[in-house]
Length: 198
Length: 192
Image (cartoon, rainbow over all chains, first blue to last red; front, top):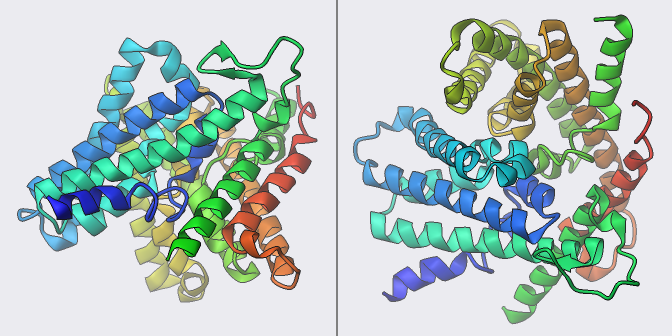
């Protein structure tokens, strides 16, 4: 139990995939204009990460070493296709606002890196906790970024107005420069915190 | 299809909708290889080369072999690009060793570069014809190369400047990207 909790916890802050390992940045920057989009992206991403890690971990003894990358790609691309089609069918507006970033989960570096470095070597139960931790870590980063951008950039949170009528939102926060600069500040804060703790 | 539309597609892909600064694509290699100018230019040329080639192949595959199988787009495209990169690597290693030496180490990284897959998706999405797709791919990957070279230059200067201690490393890189992106916003409205 202790070990499982450790695998889960490392993804949250100490090895946060976005803010510390610096992988999977495209979707984090692009869809964090509203909290709703960020939550949708987190759900889609988590599904792909968890299913592909579990599939690879379950069949890891059958995979010949020199064919492993194509087999990983089949598992990842298959679950990404499932997410893409389900989202298109049941939530067309969300699918439209996430746009190209749902199919692009397939080349998200986090998924391939976790599958190659973790799921290919470990048992299913440990892998499940690693995938959950990484998903939550990704969610923390993207939702924290989206919350700040939505509140300052359009004056709302999850669609509800936060500031009084007279508030003029800063439009540049919603544009690319805002995303890059706020992410830079987050990375500085988290690294500083971890550096001080250790 | 007139020449003006073609020029518009090219300029829009390269500058107005720049891959990195406006569309947020290909961030991982973008932050990863811009540490020095040589690797940035090497990666830039490798991306231009592979993207243009991948666009030609995926366009043909999509329009001639995938009628009725459009829902498999993600699976087919990622496999096409992965095997293409592998073939290019083998070919260059055997026949053009000089080019392989300068581009070779960047080729394996390119399979997981989301900008290439994204460009092929956008081409299908906007239903561009063959010439338009080719120009879009060339322009967009050229824009990616420009972005790489700009940031590599900025980072070489950053190495000798007095950065506050808590912003050293990646944070200042992201803030620089943000400031370059402000400049690229100025091109908005160049093409209607």
